[in-house]
Image (cartoon, rainbow, N blue to C red):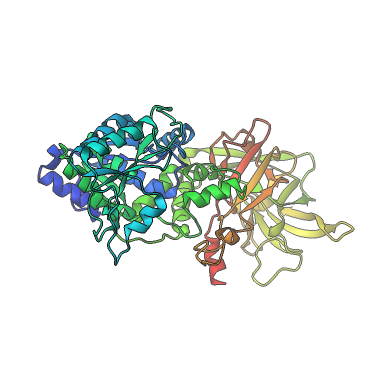
Length: 561
């Protein structure tokens, strides 16, 4: 344990440090990440992944992956496989892999034990009747007519539930706790329900399935979990977690600790709403680069290290908060600034002819792959008479303090020469089709000859004849245009979607070296942003570059406007 760990302000770490100092749990730290395999992991799950696996690593402990597969109607092996892949991609490896379904026989035995202790009963009330009987925060609940039935009768009915003698919803097994408890979770909660559905692991062997609150704590106990770390919405469930372990007199009693989940502005993290976006085809799937899923962020080009960094910076607290989306983008930029090779790309090209440059000449300019990292080496960038620049880098009637190309004005071409615009060529509709310029030969590599004023503007470019064009560039932005989508109760959250969240550029001109860009490689397109080679859509014939993030946070300017 490092000195930094000893003085950590993270309250969960401090609990573990205290437990270790008191020699609790035989000096062990065993955590687990227990997702339900009913969807894809998103950025909110990433915080729990980083916390559970990170604590185990920091304290020389173990972290297990356990799938809470107690609801067969919503779960699928597709989600199991995706969750495992996402955890590995985030940089973690579990010590053991478990499923709640591994314990179905044992959980059934625990339920029988509760019945024999007079602490559980089979109830015939419908779901609607149970809600009516439950009471409110100010009024106690009403006992079920079956609450005081005999142990023998409850054992018989529970076995009948298991054997399929009742229809779905006709009977449930409930814990007998206290229908007047201030905590509504303790008012005789359901332990088992009937659900005729094929389970992705156990098939049709079972038609009764344990509820999460019952299975969760007992699964923790069976795995000897020492610290059961979960989000704040489970804080009110902790007394029930403890009650099952106490009344069953289990050999160990894991400690449940709650922390605030990760929420982001301009984002929704509700699985139900994300599923709605997918099913209604507002996005192209769970891995759409605009989605907050781990798979979507991976396709967008967010490095796993940047996501881990965000989770570390957000910290672990007991207070719910909403993190600015810009904080995530800042982590991404910081990571990519240090690692992404630099390249030039023109996404909205306008042709430039350098009239005094020899027609038959092409020169190769030596350019650094990264200005701050000489170990990344150099590359050769071809320069010739005909080049492309961004249409936005030319203004026929320049505004004050405009430092890019304009008629009669100078601008420096990145890594190359200073050019001066002499003539503007337009088509019949008035659209600019070509710029004719001359270059200053003695200005190569940033030189300013005597008598020339210092040129303030620097623009990027790509040589026409050698440009790589078998590609497409996708400019992704935030999926929602407001900080808190759907926060207006009268508003459908989908009405808050950003109509400009995706722009596809097909007429693009890239440095020729990008023709060999590996799948899932990162680049900074100079002056434009960070881009990533999409591993799902790219082919040998056509590469797809996704904009991961712009070079600056333009949303702050928009919000202040």
